[in-house]
Length: 273
Image (cartoon, rainbow, N blue to C red; front, side):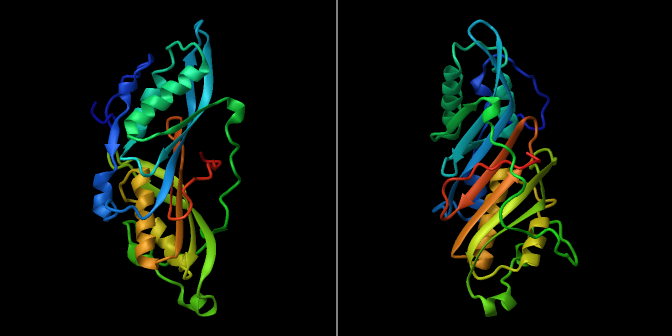
């Protein structure tokens, strides 16, 4: 199957697992120099909100989906293909909800080349949206001359704070993040969380760096890995976690989580998701 992104789509409504389009993680990681020995762990959490199938008698059923894909999997799946795949359940009969969940788990695990966790949730069991992310929001800081092309040079240590507190533990977040789809150029909106232990990071520089992704083209997962790699290289924190909470599109949102000490993502959902 060719990448469906940016192409006219036929919306199949009978079960069709071959709609899933696989993307190798290796090439993007090679470009960032992190393929040989991953400096992080983590996972990609997907929530699906537009999912329906037929029970054994043909009555429509609905539910939500929570998918966890390990960051160590050799492949990821392209998001539009996931939407097309989920839509293909709509007119297919399954004897029980467990059969639906089993099919989802098998198909998605086969696609990513690793064991994926798939939960079929009743609508009332979807986690409520959190008011915001933990820690301090840096969005009110001034930016003298914003840059809109990825600029890791903006990442720097906060010398003034370092004199008072050489090592800090803090959580920062921003809701101003935007990047672009590498195929269609469509905007991808997100909130970003950075949690670290180490020399204080200059918050104004961090905000400017996150804003500099505004015209940067990459998939969600690669974008979060790039931020992790840049922070590691420029600021050398002892511990680092980066989480990206991307806005829902087509009934699916993706939240990549990369960390060198927190392997499991919290599974938060934000109001925009």
